[in-house]
Image (cartoon, rainbow, N blue to C red; front, side):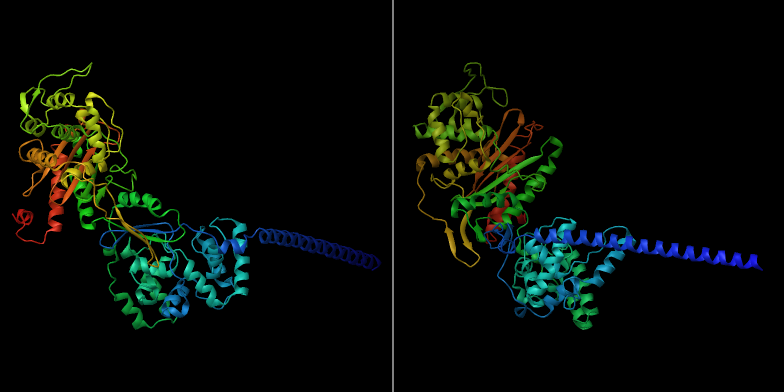
Length: 620
């Protein structure tokens, strides 16, 4: 019995000792967890304090400058493109139909009016979805957080930025009412294509104020918030409408609209907003944009720039150039450029290359290419000015100047020929012999005052077009013949005005200065008309008056046709950016055909007379 009592006593002691040990361990664990939590809390507090202290200056952020927008507009008032960030007047909630802000709230943050800047429910749901899918699949930023980011922060993805966003969201909720926060959001949110705010978006995509948006249009704009580029109604109307259906169903589920209103909006036809946009013309727009500051100086306001561009002719020119080069692509032709001017120098169409997205380099205004025989009219104009006549004779015989010995394209000589025949048939030897009997400085002077702006070396080969020129310059130079001998410097801008309608610039249509006498113009016109009727330019023939000249550089590296009708002057160039030779593509082939098709399109577009020769030509 004593042994049992002693054993029981020992067991009790052991149990008490174990219990005290467990209790001690429990206290130690609690202390450790408490200290660990305190350290974590302290670190979090210090980091939050650091984030608070490194917040951007609020006053500076609110007044942050932006790049003023420049909207380029075609002659008919349609938009070509907009550069910079487009904002509009501040719009207030009371100015909008109820469903406009409601669509935004329902799709972006439907607990907006009940949370304090941070949506705990939405955050928990988003984290659960992201953990299940093991990727970022759903966000949980409230409208208030987005305002904080848009107004004060950058798009940097970091923990600090997220903490600062939350701190600013709390500050916004404390400082402003829900209506004020939503107003800030609607006026600053990005909605694609350089457009900020719902009013600017309504103007851009629907040509109206946000005050006049329909329910469907409101749903489309709200739907864009998820991915402005993907759901842009101008670029992807079908995708935008599909996304709008999701928004409308959410509005119905949240009780914002009735089922009838939802169905009516889904079935509402969407106006073709693309009809107010010019397709293409991006090289032209870049050229205009780069000139704006030269007209009005540096600016801090949004402007509209009215231009001379003929939308239909531009789109025809782009289409024709693409189709014709594609037709000849097996002959190593990869690029081209077109400039169409009226007789006063207004740029009606300009194609700077085949694919703007692949290359923004403007081959119409920046590329320097050899014009070949398209330069020869400057030689003949100089001769006519100095008393030569179209029927005067010149020798088309071999010529050697130093080590340079040119040849005709057909490798033959043609003896004594008239100036008219020499230019009509594009004889190189006759042209060089003529140029050598003139002063080359006079030839350069004529080319310069007619519109050639590039360097022209005073060498014997100048007469055959070895000096590099721009396509735009060649069109301008021929315009001086087409309009009767007057200087016609190319221009594209007619007016610049602010968004409030204040005129900042208007083109001065002063009297042009005469640079060629009428007699010379009449004679060179007759010869160049003969080029099309009987010479190298026969493929450019039209059922109406036309005059022009082919041009081909050495080894078929460049091919040109430059000419005019009673309405327009056009210069066409084809070749390769790497200056590689084409497969026997000369000015009398592809460029002449492109020129003809563009001129036919131009005449047809501008003629209302059903008996006009071009109208009848198409009816044949």
